[in-house]
Image 1 (cartoon, one colour):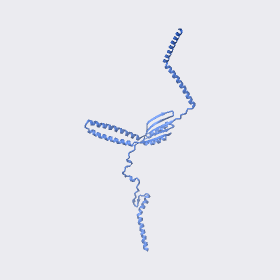
Image 2 (tube, rainbow, N blue to C red):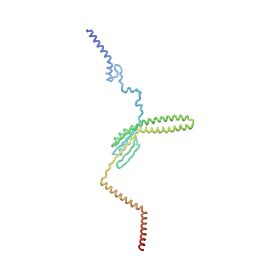
Image 3 (cartoon, rainbow, N blue to C red):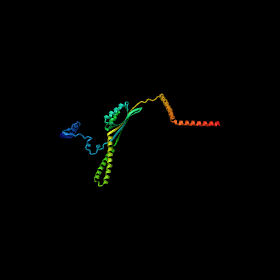
Image 4 (tube, rainbow, N blue to C red):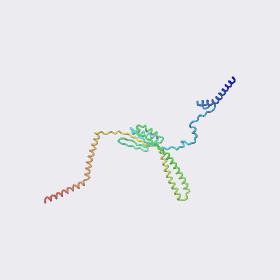
Length: 290
């Protein structure tokens, strides 16, 4: 009985030793990895895969293959200020520091306000910064509007048609070298001329779009308002009375001028009246004598 018990105990010890030898390396590796060590039992433990690893060698197309967006940014902004000259100097310094320039600058003065209408061109990378800088100029932002127009499709279409036109010209030039008659040469040259005009037009449009994308536009209204005093009732009556005297004087002067201008007519009527009165009086005297 003792021998059976002893053999059973040895069997349990042997099973426990085997289980410990198979599980210990992984447990030790896990413990060492949790402490940030890379070597466990003389072997290097690779770090767990990151979420970005499967995409490093992924052959599927990503955002890098997408066309670059062509965005035209523009905006409108109104600033009400107390000191127009200082505000304008501040606007000048900000625009100059950010590499901008005035495409249009108009000054106006009215009884109730004075101001500037400014059309500013600025590199697109500095556009948002300029808006923020103008917002902190001494004064009040009364309105602000920013627009973004995507011209990517138009730009890509122009580039594609430009490449096609240039390819057609290349083919026409080869045909021109092989032309046998003057008629064929003239027809080919006319085709080339038309294509060259189209190419120049497309290139001009592409340059324009690039410029509009590279430089944003901001229409800035800088204004200072003045307080207009309302007229009292006495001032209004005095103004109306003075206006009435002036109008009456102008009317008399107008009538006098009309009389002076009509002196030939008045003289003629006077002579006719005198002649008629004289002759009628003479006839009446003859009738009385009879």
